[in-house]
Structures are given as structure tokens and as C-alpha cells.
Image (cartoon, rainbow, N blue to C red; front, side, top):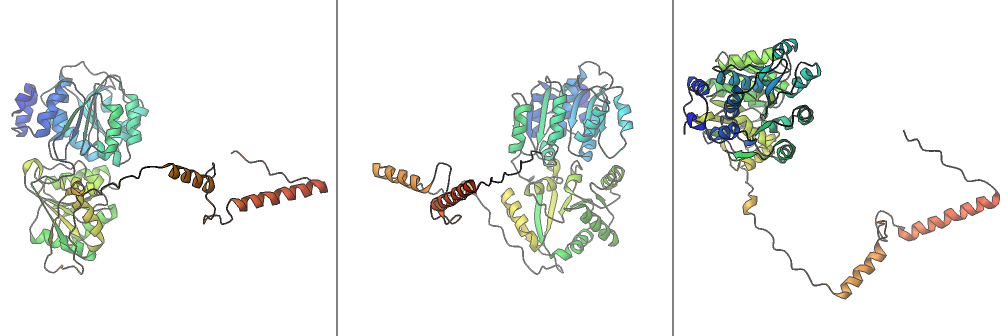
Length: 468
């Protein structure tokens, strides 16, 4: 199979060749023809499978034969969850469209909005955006959607995880009803399917990789270590093995900063990338990492979305993620496009439950390693994998045939034990007095009311309730 057999135009084929790609990936083989024919597409693919090109290439071809874009209008919109991913997709659009007379731009938060508004004034054929900044631009009348032809939701599962569902719904309400919709996600979760019910029209469904599975080219292992010795072990592994380009994941921003300082103190060049960093600092750190100016990039899960390095050799989980699915996303940064990769997790005793969840998710027991000089005080136990598909079902007990006596007995119990309003039967632990207690209490209240009437005193009225 070649790219030319997928129906792509000569300018696009030339750009693909200049990038050094010879054969399309499985997701590209299925998605490109479907997009070219104008179908809505719902595709599930893990990172590193070539999914960006699978929508960028046909999108550019469809736009190349359309009408000229008007001022402040856009013809195609690609929504992404993070700034890094937006920048990455925008680079792909520019690279693949270099021989076409189409204009593209990218907008995201963390930078000044005025330069972005200026770029949109002349109109843009392809706009890559994060949801928040797009709504900001719309509120300032900097962007119009009446010319929109194609909408792409990239990494839709991550956008939902990050709480963008309200922003996405606001954006969808602003768009023309007649448009082509393309949705790409790592998994088809229940929330994703719920979103697609109102978004996609008879979509072509594509799923090219098993759900929650890592690439076969990634070698996965676990290093057992005490929690306090993790920074020293990480520094030791990097220096002892002479590793370059190591992407390290932490759970928190402050943890990323602390670990970066520790590595720098040990003579390992490193930089942190997370939400508290300015966009300029994040862009510089990523550029230095790609160009091998620094050996280690320490990142949080959200900031790492969009890090696309074709041959990233090492991913280290300094701390396991709280959500097992994020483990698959993390290690998906290595072993891309068939290249070899290594994913190592530093696991301490307090992370045993998290490791167990990960191993049950990926249906695999990870190899345990111990480094000399870092033997932990407690070994990490082997996970016993759960297999719901082979779990024998308990045979159902045969039901006894009903008799008239049974029916009468149930009716009698119901009459005695429960009133129509749902009161509990006599002898209930919540009210030992039962129905009889409530009846006696009612009689006492009646007697008091009768005495007051006779004495001529008026019963006190309850104060009126306040509705607000």
C-alpha cells in the first residue's frame, strides 16, 4: 500500500515524500479515504500511530478545491486539549500543506491574544485551537464560523478528562449544522460515545489498535525502590546507562520542579514542563529536549500531551499515575512508528495498588527489577491478573412455583409490616414504638388541643416560612 493509492493529490504526495514517509500506517489507510469521500469519522488510535496525518492530509486536499476564505472566517477547525498538541498539529498542517495555497494558524492560551487576532483578520483556511482561547477570540468578534466546512476533535478523550465538555458544547452550538465531523480518541469510552450521538452523522468507525494496549515495540519493566530513594535511583540509571532524551513523568508540578533541581545538582541537564510554566518556557524546554541540548524533560501528564518525537528512546514513570489509562498514554510517547522504546516505572511500596490497576488494565505482569545499592525494604508483590471473560458464572437457583398460600402469606406480611406511605414494620430498629407509638402520640396531641380549647387559649401559630 502506498500513499498515492489512497487518492491523495500530487502536492500532498510531494510533501509526504519530503518528510521521508514511504508507506501509510493502518490508521491512515482506513481514515484518509473515508475523509476524502466526505464521511464523518470516529477513529480510535493510540499516540504514535500516525493519526495526525490521517486527518490533516485529506482535510488539506478537500479544502484545496474550495472557495476563498473571507476575512475573520475559517474553513476547518481542529480542537486539541493542550497548547503543545495544538502547536504539534499546526506544524503538521504547515508541513503537509507547504505546496498548497492555503493559510493556516494556531491559537492557544498563555500568550498575548492580539497577535492571534491580527492573523485571523485576513481569514484562515485551517485553524488549530484550544477550546478556551477559541471562545475568547469569538467573544471579541475576532472569528466567524459561517464558512466552516470541517470540524476535527483531536484526543477527544483527553479533552473530556480535562473538563472541556462545556466549552466544546458551546463551540458546537456556534458552528453551522452542515459540516463534516472527524473525532479521534485513544478509546471509545462511554462519555465519548455519548458525545458522538449528537455530533456525528452515520460515521465511519475505525479502531486500529487494541483498547488500553501499549505498542509491542515498547519494553516495559518495574524497578522496585523505596520512595525516598527514587530521585537518586533515577539519576543513577541515567548516568550509569548514559541515556539521552529521557522523558520523565511526575504526578505534580512541584514534584517536577524538585526532581529537575535534583537532576541538575547531579550534573544531568534537565528542564520541567507543566501548567505553571509560561508558554515561552514550555516551548523552549521542548525545543531544547528535541535538539538534545538537555537530556531529561520532566513533565506532568497534561503538559506532555503533544510531545511528538519520532524516536524517543526512554520514558520513565518517576511516579505512577493515579488513573491507570494514563500509563498507556505516557508510555505511548516511545516506541512510535515501529521504533524500539523502553518504559521504566519506579515503584515504591505505597504504589502497589496503582501498579495492580495498571497491570490488570493492560493484561500484563510487568518484569520486576532491583538495582544494586537500591534494594527496597519491601518487595513489590506480583499482581494476580483478573480475567472477567473466563470467570465462571454462578448457576441460578431454580425458582419455586408459587402457590395460593404463598400469595396470601405475602399479602398478609405486606399489610402488617408496611403502610402505603412506606413506613417500616413494627419492631424496626429506627423506631421501637412502631405504629402503636405514633398512634399514642397523636392521641396525646388531640387531648392537649381539647384542653386548650376549653380553657379558651389559642394555639400558637408557626411563623411563616421564607421561600428565599
